[in-house]
Amino acid sequence: MRYGRQVHAPLFPSAWGVGAVDGGHGPWVIATLLMVLALAGGPLDGFEIGHVPRGVGDRVSDFSYEWEDVRFAARVWERRLDGGGFRVDLRVLVLRGERLSTPRALRGFLADYLEGDLGDTVHRLVEPGVAVVVRIDGARFAREELAATAAGIRPAIGRRPPVSGRPAA
Image (cartoon, rainbow, N blue to C red; front, side, top):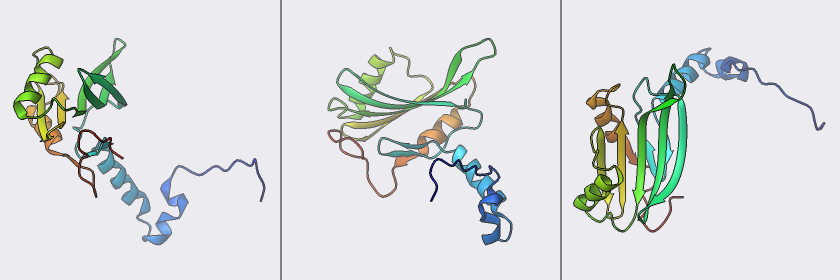
């Protein structure tokens, strides 16, 4: 075995041998799967983001932070503006904290955190201490996209969302 040798794999999927297995449809199968995955946001702190609206920015960032004894896991989709800079199209937040004990407590916390601006936001208390929040740019996306994104957030496959005191695996 030789070490230090570079191996270059072609980018076209059929060169990976997929076409030989499925009768030549490999590139189409992979392209379809990639399209479906592009419309899903992936895992975030014990949840799967199953729907992301078409047209959201392609700059995706994950953050974790804490505010007022509540831990946040955040995923943000941004797009580059023509004049420079970026604008947030979509935010998905998983919040964990003891003070998120009831729907009313969650709403009060979010009103403080968002300084009263709950517009273009959907939130759900999954269990005491665990909440999911979705915010969308209402000027670019219809309210139906906000609802579809929120409805597409589910506990990660094979496990339920962890209790607020334990981090997701």
